[in-house]
Length: 323
Image (tube, rainbow, N blue to C red):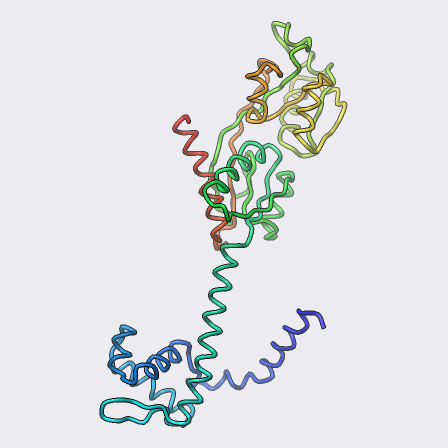
């Protein structure tokens, strides 16, 4: 049978025996089992009380409660030491199984909470500007860091956050903040770039009409770079000569490097090529963008989530410091 079916079978078996859990005031707690095991190990209630940092009357009452619950005597009370009865031996054996299972459960969950990869959703621009440098820091400082990154439109990312399909999201611009924690992580520019041999390089001023006549590579639908340049052109009464819609900004950069057209790209993605003279930034065509990190306010941060959030905040601190 499927593992899930097996789990449901076990759960159903417990439900059928729910009367074991419905005896009001008689359910033995994990703390009571811990106290019983400590007394059994020490043979003295005073010593058990000292080890567990509770009063001796608390220890005595706990043992008495367990004995009342099961109508048994767990210890023979000798003047200087307690000894387990036959019923106490049975109870200790079962208690140790439960405590060992609890320790195993705690260890497994602690390991998995730290080991689960953080699910990151980001826009294409945020991926290049924020996610990649943050991941470099995370993996350098924490070799065990794990992540899964998906690139989507802002609209899709908003839906993913709402439906718990991602743990954290990085977008440029804002999202509706109901139920979300929001952290500003970086300011970035998007710039219009062309090849050094492109006619724009020798022009004193490039206007919207000039841009509308050039082969233009755009990122996929609903991307911020696409929306930014289209809105700017339309506001000035012009469109774009779109020659290709590409899902990868790296591919778009390669097309511009090959002088196949022009494009709007994040400055962080083209800084090296601009400095080396492999690309040219068209003056008057740049826009500042704030990048924000979001996660559900009610969500418990795993170790990897906290590491990633810290890595993003470090980027913000570096920006403020000018490093």
